[in-house]
Amino acid sequence: MPGSLPSQPGAASEKRELVCPCTSPPAWETCVFSITNGRIAFHLFCNETNLSASAGGERTESMRIAVLILLHKWTDQQKRLVEFLAREYEVFIHADKRSKLTIETDLPRVHVYSEYKNYWGHHSVNDAAVFLFRQAAKLGFDRYLLISGDDVPIKPLSEITRFFATNDLEFFEHHLMPRDHWPGNGGFDRVDFFYPKVLSRGPSHPLTVKFTILLDRLNRRLLIPAMRKVARRPRMPVEYWGGGLWLNLSAHCVDQMLAWLDRNPWYPRKFHGTRCADEIFFQTLIFNFVPDVEVRNDHLRYIDWHSGPEFPRVMRGSDLEKMRQSPALFARKFDHNVDPAVIDAVYAGLG
Image 1 (cartoon, one colour):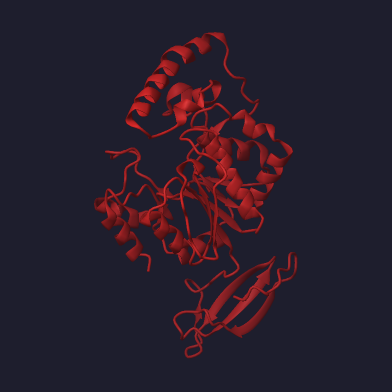
Image 2 (cartoon, rainbow, N blue to C red):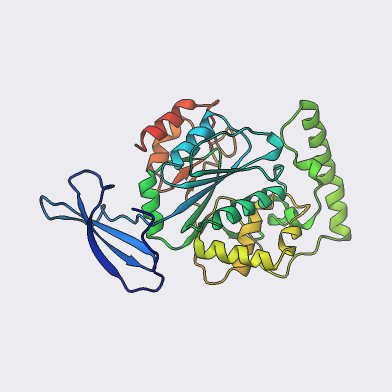
């Protein structure tokens, strides 16, 4: 729909009839749309039969979706993901500054940044995610989806758009802490003790990896037990919530979240020196400091934490039917070095 249509917050519903050039198949030539609070709902009609496409034909062309991607590598797999999403969505990429990625794209809907060096389990992941939310919010969207470069959509983009056009909830995984199956006092060890950045550097030279593993064992077996007896880092006087990082947030939630962070810069600093607290940062923030939101405990991702051999499992051809049967919108993780054929099969099914 042309971008010149004005948004009319609070205006009464208005109906018009026009020839819509974007409808498909071509037989659906005429549509009636209504504008209510800036959202345009389309109802297509067949000129030949005068039948309405009510169940599957309703479209919300004004639904604006931003996909935020945390990248630490740029291969044909990630390039394919970005190009596919950019057909209909604005894509905001944060490329790990440490990885020194060269991402060249002339797609107008793709925005690339590299502001932070990201380390596994480090608070820099929170910083990069918040940065992407801020950049996208400057343009204003109805829905913000945070994914990784190892994700692939398993539903057509039109179906994803339709889902969010009819669901105003916030969708992300959340569990009140302490969480039963999280080790380390139900996950509280992640925020109760100090973890030096050297423990979060991730894969590099084999000798560096071995040294990091040794330091991590010393930290867990000697320093943390000693700190249990002396003093923990003080917790915030709020309920702590945890879950996966992968978020699907409304504009209402994102706007309030960013405004609150602007007024409370102490909150991100509270997570400095923590470990894997990217799985606590947003859940705790939203449940305690973002009012008037309704959250569903569903991150809308197909993830297999049980089958192995990796945890989470890297998708293979044997997982294809389970992904197709899943109500999830995205699946992860994929690796073209493990099974490129399953990636091809998923995209082939999306049209």
